[in-house]
Image (cartoon, rainbow, N blue to C red; front, side, top):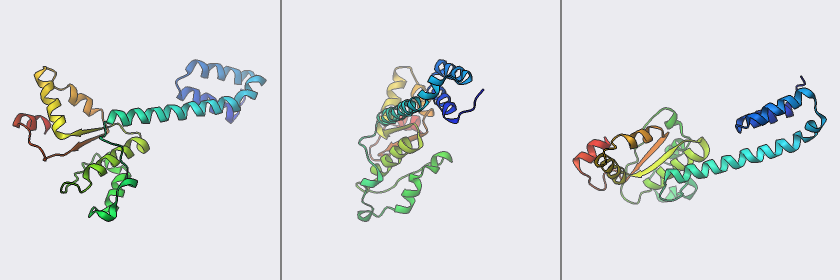
Length: 187
């Protein structure tokens, strides 16, 4: 068996794309030393890299949509100069280490201070750069969904879906009142 790194990379890419039959066939062609396959390796590698990149783009777009952010926001669009927010701390949070440590982040401040913008930017960063599953909720909307789930005798289904997330963002906590039973379900 020959050990050509470029051919081996093609097999690895095929397997990562879950094209196991093609990976097996490529392995066999490598073992046979097929000159036609050897000539096609650069083209195949380029096509597979393009497919992997396209799948990555589609996956990120899907995760951004599934997160249900109110709008696309990132830190580039936030004016730290016009805010009292600690920029260094926000940029540290933006690195995403708090998710790996399972730390909670609570953004406190008056209306219009940028809490929602920063929370959304942290979520977008988590999806785009850390490949995390994120969901954004207005707290009242989440409580309403939990109460509706309970009235439909489906308690726990939403909680199970939320447990599969890497990051849950609750916006507007404390701005609007909700029922005592809703508060009990939330906390």
